[in-house]
Length: 173
Image (cartoon, rainbow, N blue to C red):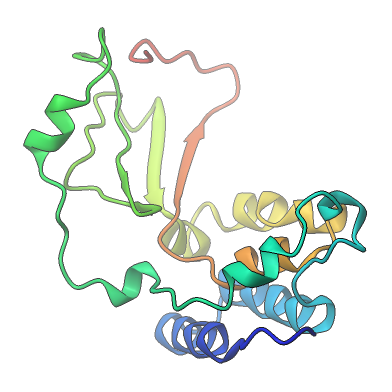
């Protein structure tokens, strides 16, 4: 691995693993972190990153704070109202703040028979466990770089949105 200090990412990985117990998502995180430690950050020697110059490593020499580090949500419903798309009055809206699903700001108008929306961690424990297992992180079978691995090692706060086969949603914008 190059000279980038990865202690911060290791600490965040360990915190996520400890906080969420063992499940499909923690297994994906574990495999992602193992791969990240093996491959490190991509360099210009990696085909997909050959035009990035020295910039990618320099990005990780800075101090970052993941969403868990932030203690207050600064987005309000009035902020959402200012940025609504035309025609969205009757639409289902999934709101993410800093990459994390925010159920309080989201509006699901479709019935549960039409659209299933669950936090990823909850979906992985229940009825949708097999769907999560079948689809989450399958991109790692073909993408083998450190950025992709780091992304999967820090999965947290995502959402499953599931529409049954042949179901038509009327509330889409």
